[in-house]
Length: 124
Image 1: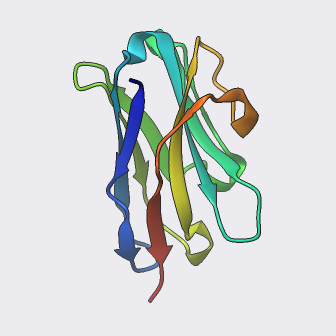
Image 2: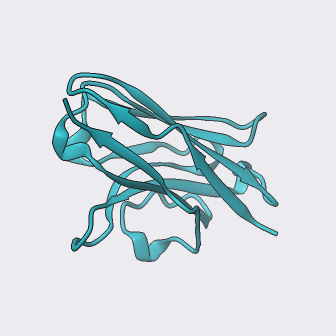
């Protein structure tokens, strides 16, 4: 059974850092692209970053460029989202998602499998 589990969320002060993890089971990252999305109540889920299968490339939303980095450890079947210089507007529920193939998309409808989410709160 394909499963994604996020971890690493929490409360951090503005300017701080967090690293989110997305642990995949039931499938291998070699064939799947992983995306990170975030959502606040009352708004649509927004794409943050993605990393393509087999080193096909990465993508970042303009709002997080220069602050967030996505990486993967295929041996651990885990994708990470390193978030630096966090701002209050980064506060959201963060989800990782998977889609088969190499298309690195920031559109949520492109993804078939989702984790349960991890809350990130940036506040002083």
